[in-house]
Amino acid sequence: MSYVQGFIIPVPKANKTAYIEVAKASGAIFQEYGAVRIVESWSETTPDGKVTDFKMAVNAEPHEAVVFSWIEWPDKATCDAAEEKMVKDPRFEAMGEMPFDGKRMIYAGFDPIFETQ
Image (cartoon, rainbow, N blue to C red):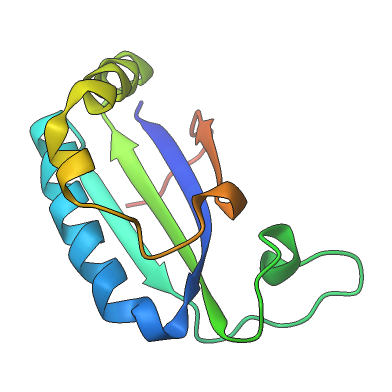
């Protein structure tokens, strides 16, 4: 079964186009490293929660959207190998400053327990 990395990222709405450009460039590299699927989703409906919600999770400000994305890998070993390569890949540094505050990005790796086709 596959391995999934999930991300929640606050992105200034004014930076949507810049974010898409970085996502496309990064996605091509992730695929080169073995990613089988990459999904980037821009928030349209992000309801306020009483205890927590997507906006609170990343401390999103009113001028920011929440991006929900994930990368599917064939397995954890491929993901781990890709992470090692990313650190050394000069193409990421060449992208310059990211169009979001990476300190508020949340990410984690997941072992799928159920899938449908």
